[in-house]
Image (cartoon, rainbow, N blue to C red; front, side):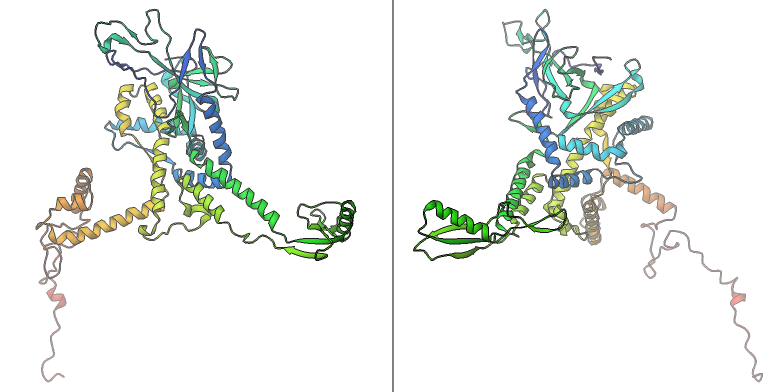
Length: 556
């Protein structure tokens, strides 16, 4: 079980030796990097993809600080992780798992233990935000190597800048196996005549804060140390630059938009500062003065009439400060004899300084690059809490995008839960391969659009079912209405039938098959709830209700 600063979980039934392939295992998350092997250790090219990803992660974090990007990121994180006072942000769903109730209870217990180790109820927002910005997240699963059956003791977060997941070819043995492929028999083209290299997977960790590159020994060099694959839980964004092979963040598409927005804003500020004030042009008549004397005369006139008022923000005073030259000075130009003489003209200030159409364009472009509806920008617009048909289609696309993010993020729980269940001998690695397909994670939902959409669809289905009721038995069967119009599944049909039988037997709802009185609309022999009607006893009550004897004639 123990293996070099971590542990390894081996399958009891490894892949058959006859199942061979010249293609090494490929990882869909983009962490498919190979290290060249040498006599003293392994070497990673520092100019390759590692350095690229290191720079990208730092750039992602710098971009996330920008106000516009931070607002869009918060919209995504708040939509995916819903914090509630009483409910947990995530719950495990085992309804589709074909296992005993005892196994399900143990799985729920261990999942609760993992959430407690992560402190997910309190730190869910930070964990999800770090994963979204970096495009990856790493956790070290710490166990007692002498007592692995006690399970995971601690889940320790690892900075993405200090961790790297690599694959390398194992060094060749004495018989030549494990390295380059070797053809044993040249007589035919049988695939079994080839030995293909074995791939070793592990993580490289560098505690110094530098990206783990350079020489890496078996015991761990100064640049990094090896950690077993199963000792680390990691999850990436799933976005891969297929040309370079690097893993990207969802912020990658917004890099250009954010930079453009910042440049446009800076240039707009400079333009407004330089064009906002009105400036004057003084044409000074210098006659036939020589160039030097003309310049001196112009300078004297400028200093004589120039009056620069300076506002002191510290004291709140205004003073005349002629010794400072401002950036927005008036223009003083000499004019020779024969001109129009001394003249003063005014340059108008910048026009349309309030136009920010370009700013709004790049802000919307930024939001669209992050798959966030532009209607959420600055709180403008928004979706109506009326009919779902009035809601923008962008909200529907955004909801699907958040659902994909949730499904991708839930992989960290899969890996942690797998390790915990196997270490505690609750299941085997083979059992997990079957169980994992039926384990789902339900995130706490706070999307009003989804609720409105479900309610509207339900109302539409009920309306169509009511309209089709006269045709049941003539053109359509009841089963067809339930399956095609109400969209009930087989399990829902069985469940609803059992519930209706129980409620009819308990008298909660009337029996739809009972005969009905055409005049009153009530079941014959029973009331609306199926209970028998107690008819009054007219004979026994006759004496009490009989009219009093009328007086005889002549007594009135």
